[in-house]
Amino acid sequence: MADENNPVDIDTTEAAGLDGSVEADVTALHDELEQLRQKLGDAEDRALRIAAEAQNQRRRAEKDVESAHKFALEKFAGSLLQVADNLERTLESANRDDEAIKPFLEGVELTHKGFLDVLERFEIKQVNPVGEPFNPELHEAVSILDNPHVEPNTVLHVAQKGYTLNGRLLRAAMVVVAKGAAKRVDTSA
Image 1 (cartoon, rainbow, N blue to C red):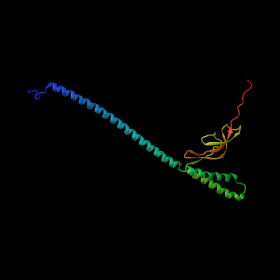
Image 2: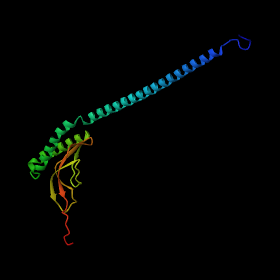
Image 3: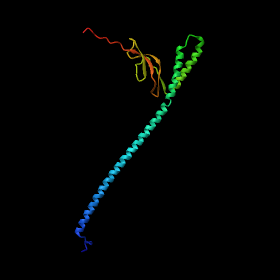
Image 4: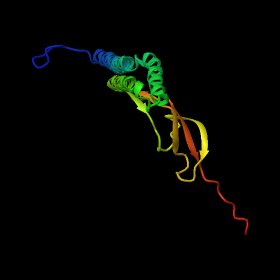
């Protein structure tokens, strides 16, 4: 029966049943909310991974393009090295005392210098390591000679100059290296 303070007459057994179903509904909604939060977290994680992968691919592509620009000349430059070698051989083999060929030699020297300047402009640098320590990353030893006047593993002679392109080895310098002094074995003991 309804009174002034409680306008709705609710059966307490009926209210207890409603509380149970509301509690079940709240629990179900809470579980669904947790599942949705988990799905959202997973989706955010996937989105971050996809964005990171896209950024990594963009960086790799930029690096590949940069390498392509830097080293596109590699084969062409390698072919040009033969011209530099031939000009050097011409200068080395020429008889500088012959007055008749002095103008010719001056022309070859200017051509050689101009050619090396062009190579430098395109970041093709000469490796001429006479007197330097042997470096297997830049030099190829073609011979080893005894020379007690220099440190072991010092480059004594360059048979063929090497070249780098943008800091990367294009052709190793072919060198003659000083042999280390033979170690004496003390047999007095």
